[in-house]
Length: 416
Image 1 (cartoon, one colour):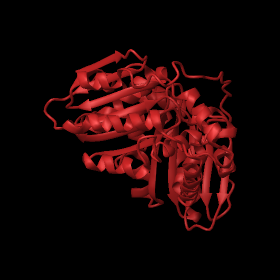
Image 2 (tube, rainbow, N blue to C red; image 1 turned 120 degrees about the vertical axis):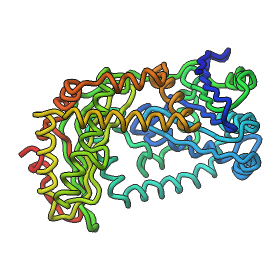
Image 3 (spheres, rainbow, N blue to C red; image 1 turned 180 degrees about the vertical axis):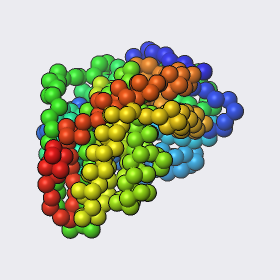
Image 4 (cartoon, helix red, strand yellow; image 1 turned 45 degrees about the vertical axis):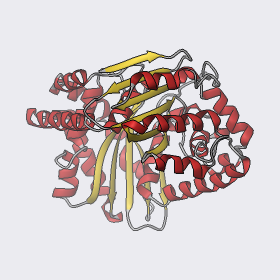
């Protein structure tokens, strides 16, 4: 059973207790990510996440890590477009010590300028690592292109130039504005004492501001654009994208199932056509990227330089067939079973449950019960999938990005 409460400090606490396990996972979710930033401080949300591990008024960075190890915990954090999450998983008896460590990081981090300079160099290396991974680089590029300059297209890591300009004053100023009690969700899943968790968090976040400072954002319309980056690599990486739907859109389930059929599994049309039948690519897939108020659909393939045109022709063909004929009853039934199985498997993992309830509560203000999710998949018809296919089926309207070893005119291939 899931319990959602508003604590005295104004923060939301969501708890899902499972008595038959011997572990618990706890996450502190903050509604602050890349889309909250400006060009001047691009990457600051991710920078803050890194700095939370670099020492508090009570603990050094080494002591933070040692205290987690003492309780046999596993902890980490991640930054996304809309949220940052700090989380820990431990034995049930140790989750309270784990929660105290995370609270100390959130409320007592020092943000020492010398440590900031060290960590800035670490993030520079992280940026280089992405650039050295063509499949990661091409996805970051297409995310920026399809977002047409809107906040959700902003890089999570930032740029070397933006990071160089983020000093302690800018970092703590952003943190003070965005890390507010009304924009934080505490999510706990597993076996734990609900009253003890509630008491731990009831007053501990009072040092944070009451309400998050938000800016009015003028969203720009979708604009088709292209970017081809030529490097000394042996393969061409291609990514195409077009607008999709948001997390809470009525077409969400249809988009998930459509993607599974089109390019989301080994039995999908893209995989079978481009890899199995034509042998054009080792890796080919499609995916949905969902946010609270927007989303996009993308297609990726890694191919030999001389197979680019054949691969793009095959993608065009499959999109045309999807929009023209829709899907079969057998394909839809198979996709439903795949997605429902994946969802149910996730319910059996304590960390996955914490991530699911925390993210949904933070971004959507509600949590979908298992029977709602399963019913959502079951309710999708072939007509619903065809409606989704119509939205993403116009190949000539896609944005395109490529990281390649051989220059080519991607725009001409896509627009025709």
